[in-house]
Length: 289
Image (cartoon, rainbow, N blue to C red; front, side, top):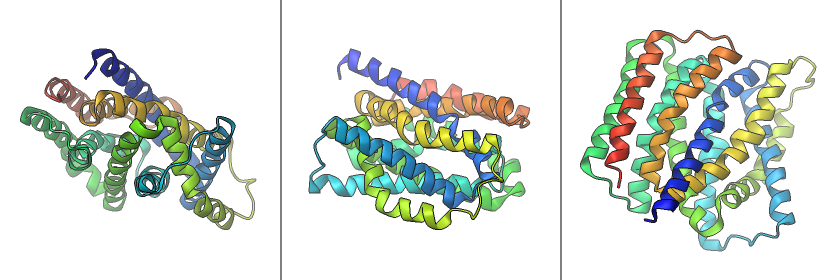
């Protein structure tokens, strides 16, 4: 694989991770005043309309029938599944708590990359990936699950569908392009998301505060559209298994955002778990090729 292309993949992947790091704190702020179903459908509708405008203005080709099933999996995983499941989970757990679960995403994405794309990292890669994920699971078992089993199970389900959506999106990016993939996936979901947004819309939005509106704007524009432009391109250029390990940086950035924006407490345990996972990503990266 071309070294310049790989380097570009890591840069794009890193930018995507930084953008995604704000997703859970923004979702946490939004679900305080918005119903999770309304939030999920509205964010997807706003992003879909923006994506549709880009596709029409720039006259992008339509996906062929063979690409539609993969686009449906992208829509199911990252347009509907992950946003809804995390919004439901964040009614039971803090964004700082849920952020640590993002540490499972690299392993999940790498597994789907091996199953769907045929990538074969060396055995040591899986050792480091599993070790990094064990920090997350150990944290959940030691304290998180006792606090909210429902919230933790919802977060775990969100990670699985998100990993699948990431992998399918990266596969299609090589054919359609990064922003085109997420835009077409959003457009594909629009006939469902738009009516659902209208059906779940509360009678009045006067109760929603400024943080909730900022959270909605962030997840609609950055989490649902702009972040994927960089992330899918990074996965496609640098390799799904390798670049997916950058997701272990997401808890680190997210915990800081949760503390600054939502004034949530970030415990030493959370920091230790995060830094332990970060130490493992270095080893996983070395053996990903």
